[in-house]
Length: 263
Image (cartoon, rainbow, N blue to C red; front, side, top):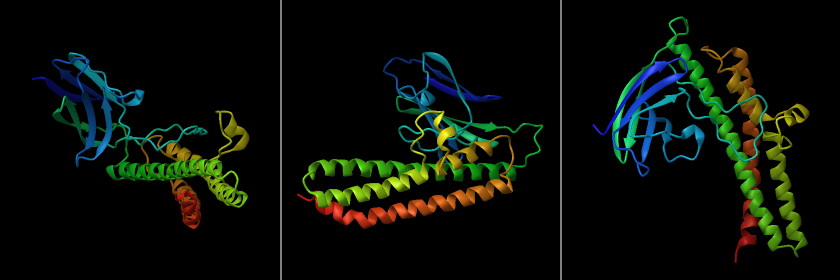
């Protein structure tokens, strides 16, 4: 066959062996890891420019090691966190699908992740940990989407201020709107953190607190502790309040800003 795929368990991840008969520089290859219901977990391709999603393809036998992790949280330019590397949750023991697609032709291979035979963690406890980490990851991503939305809006306001540089009344209104957005941005993320040393000086905000919880509770194969659940609930409540306030600010200012940009 032109392509073949098989997998095996390994302490560092799942080793996926794949054969591509006639790989050339023009070959387009993609390796996808999916849940049994078809939901995509991770995708790798030989055309990717990102190191963590690259796939090596040469004629004949190839090997790729999947670290068994789902995608991490959404990021934004200039993000500096304290002690919270962006590592997605590990896949729990069970069956999965690897799909190799070469120049539009696909091959599927089912494989199984096995638990450590020494572990006393039950399937239910594995799932509790996974569901907790996914929920935290998604909340961090939601926080970061808000940061991206704020910064895009502030870019638009900067453009408007240049266009209306002679209208002091309008400039004051735009400056007030911009300041309100900055308050929310700084409540969600410590914007003064520009280097790894800065969090020691300035501390961390809501997004970093959640991201650290994701790392801390991802160690080992254990369900989330009661304390972790309480921290998640409290930080999520505070974050939801900021996001709701952001929506209100945008809604209250959208009408007047739209009037300014009308021809």
